Length: 430
Image (tube, rainbow, N blue to C red; front, side, top):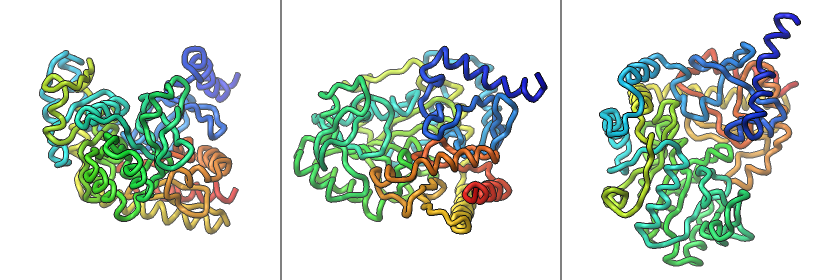
């Protein structure tokens, strides 16, 4: 066996061992690369905008830990903060000063959050926010939008029913129909559908849960005035508005989507960026709502490792780097990326559309950018799979699904943007 063959066998061997241990060989389904027809990568490390696999190949990374690594991988300030915190021990089982510091940084950036609670994942955060909304309103129904993902709790793994404003059906095995029926699934960017839901279920809807910018069906921006319509409709009915900013929080700016669009929800869920790549979630909102949470109020939620000192240290170090000037530079670079992709597609005679909001974007293989989840599903997934493979062969790692956001970050400089555009031009022409 040559040295090259030996190196190539390292990743294959790890895949085989993982397949014995984990369902599908992975610990989260999207890592399986199933929709793009490739074997899953085994990544061993990263630095800045780059990652490397077990065979030693380097890729320019647009996954970015699914949005968490806004500063790039192994940022020195974050690494040093975690190292320093680790020297004092890991989980200590009590409130830690770093919890207070990160909490203050978040509430300062998002005025709608007067109180918050840290969790260990975005799924926990959204699940807890929904429970709190039901307790605060005394109602059971929850509205979500087709194509949006809010974690894997039973009540939110729900698909659309047979028509607008009808109750949902299970979107996963193991979700009881009686649980799914408490969720109403609507099309995004459709004010009339929302109004019909409130008319059909008056004073029964506890909350509307929304990604203010959809980023789990590919990037779909809200239509002008749509978020304000959500705000007005929920307030008129007595329901709560929950912004799921697990992706958009501190990604679209320090104030997240609510700061960008000037619409304040009742409750907000966060994750990803606020942990600097470590496991984290948070939910928060108005003081009177959050004081319903135990131990002050009757809504129980707990977590042994919530507020973990190492996670808090990584989050604090990350948020310190997020200054307005850097966001402005990032958006300029993403402007160049989007324009370059459009030019490359035109030159190659390919039909594509770019879904975009600020530094988030998705290249869709369809004629126009989708306005809702159903339109996104009509994209040419086979074409995206071919494009993904062609980009990977050229050293560019995209999210392995047509329905995911690309996450360029502060570590992607002009040279990296040019490299992505050049590779896309070759891939689209191939």
